[in-house]
Image 1: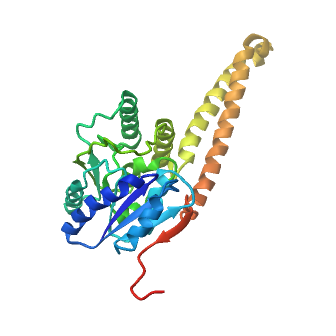
Image 2 (image 1 turned 90 degrees about the horizontal axis):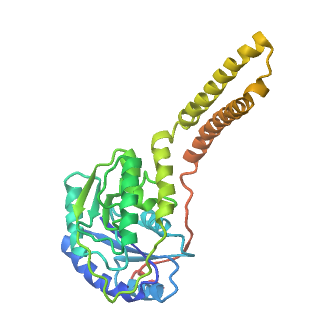
Length: 320
């Protein structure tokens, strides 16, 4: 079974054109499918339009969130509700050519776990968008060791069992391949097309580059030290304590033999070493706390980062 997960936010004018283009493509696949629209608390009539559409098509399910928790939370809600063995994600602004979905699925049929849409030749829009895209792609590759040409593409296909191992928060929906690669997922990149949005009105989600940078740093730490934080904090704590202790020991020798005033002769260095010693102890304590929090992390996997207002599906025939 195939699940199509589509977050929307104030996309009232784009929903029907997307639905009309998407359903014929899915019907031609000749496999069971469902389409999940996740309404991120739209202020227009998006939810009402989808609620009416659900009554005419049993393949549809609409999930309305209580507020706009962000794209990552919307996708997480869709993943939790999806029933298919394969999950395809895409934006609700009609920017992608839905005819590329079978190409992504073909890659999964070849044995890959994730098929990432690669907007080959994409100009990135404005100069700011191109710069932010290149920066985040480069940082994501360096942090995760997963080299993607286009980490910002929303048209992707995943095996559902891979997504079960991925817990999302922040802006991590762009880093799902990096998180999945940690669990051994095989990733393919597939060239896709992007349609012109001339005349379409859709809210762009800008200002994400800094949030993504913070998440990338977090992912780098999690991928390497998720189950052993003491290896990170303890290492630098040991370096700080060792160097400061060595310097203080060297300074103590003249004090013992000549009874000189160390503070008067090397006051700033002594203070710096004392601070380094304190920092080392703090890092060790942080490592211990990290080990404890790691246990808590594994015990809290069921916690969700969103709240559902309502779920609409078509009622069975004869139901009240």
